[in-house]
Each structure stands twice: as structure tokens, then as C-alpha cells.
Image 1 (cartoon, chains in turn purple, brown):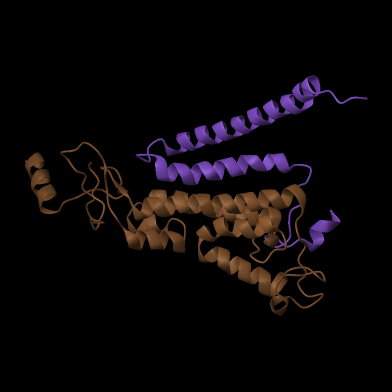
Image 2: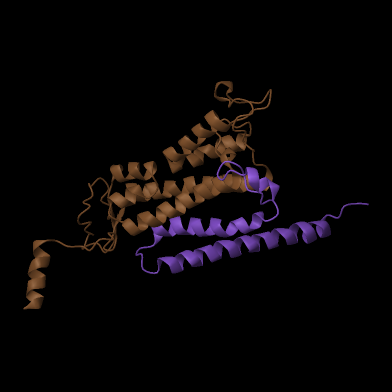
Length: 84
Length: 189
């Protein structure tokens, strides 16, 4: 907590090295907010569209992460085992 | 082809082409320019206030979110890291805010180690306003936030420059003066 004493918002970085993956949530929300404001034909149902797109981004990223984990941790060692 | 590119838009009554059934496109350089000055301003002058507010919050939320996460060092036109310098090409689409951020960084907070690329005349005095440079994932995510803000504002710029004329585009009630007065008088009698 000592680092908080000298912390200057917007100038010094946040110490989020252990929780960086949670930063995907606001990222997805703000991207959806700006993109859907341009894309939707009417503003009726705008927030529903924003939440749906945010969920799609988050689920897509989780899916991609899982797929890459399977490829790197399981498939590649199975297909090209490292000789001992 | 139903495009009407080149027509000067009327902010009072964006009238769709009734015969085509498709949305037309107008050309609005002033709104395009204003969209680059401040995210959402181009849509605001087109009287699309709700869209303007959502765009402003979305783009500036990403930009300031990136600065909050990664610190001032995520916007650095003279960074020794090539990827950070290239990132400024996208960040610049946020508008004068990105250039002001970089200027503030270069003149007030930049610290360079001996032998590092940079601009010595803009180097902050030693010990004064030392900037804690972000590293690793925090820096990358901060850069990603600000780059996405710039790229989204480019889409916003295109939408303000070439707005699609639709019935529901304007957030203000559509009225046509004399015609509406006659119609309302007829319905009340």
C-alpha cells in the first residue's frame, strides 16, 4: 500500500500486473458504447445492443484464450514432443 | 445507386429519399472536422445529441482509461520503443487531446537514461516530476486502450463526415413548420 502514497492518477501506472485480465471488461464496454452509437439505426434498444456486444467480445476473448491454451499446452506437445 | 454524396446536409430536416427506400449519404466536412477536434462534437452539430454523448463517453472513457492504467508513458511520440511510437499514429485520431498529452509528457515528465533515443531539449530536469514508466502488460493494455480510442474516433469521423440520412437520425423532433401546424390544426378540429 506504500506505493499509493506517491501515486499520481493518469501520470503513474496502476499496479495491476496480477489482475490485468479484468481490464478486458471496461475495454469491451467502452468499445461497444462508441461503436454501437455509430452503428445502430435508432437509439431505441441501444443499451441492450451495447451489453450484447460487450458480452460477445468478452466471450470471444475467453474462447480464443481457451483455444490457444489447448493448442499450446496439449496439441503442440502431442504433435511435436520435445526429445529428452 | 442512391448515394447523394456532395449534397450539403440540412441540419433542420435530414430528409430521406422517399422514392428509393434506401438511406442516402450526405457530405458534411464541418462535422467531420469537429469530430476530430473532440469525439462526438461532429454528431452534436448534426443534432444527434444522444449519439454524440455516447460517442464522447465511449472514446474518452477508453482514452482516459488507458492513461489511468498505463500512465502518461503510453502516449509517447518520441519513445525509444518502436511500437509505442507507431501507436501514436492511431492515438492521434483522438484529436488535439492526444497531442496535448504527448506535449505534456515530453515537456514535463519525460525522463531519459543516457544513450537513449529522445529529445534532450524537452527533457524534464533531473529529480523534478519523475515519471514512473509503465512496463509489461499494464503498459500494453494502456496503449491498447488509447489506440482503440483513436481507431474508434476514426470510425466516428467517417460517420460524421458522411452521415447516412435516415428518418430517425435526428434526436430532435422533426417538424416542418407550416405543414405541421396545418396538420395539427386539422386533427384537433
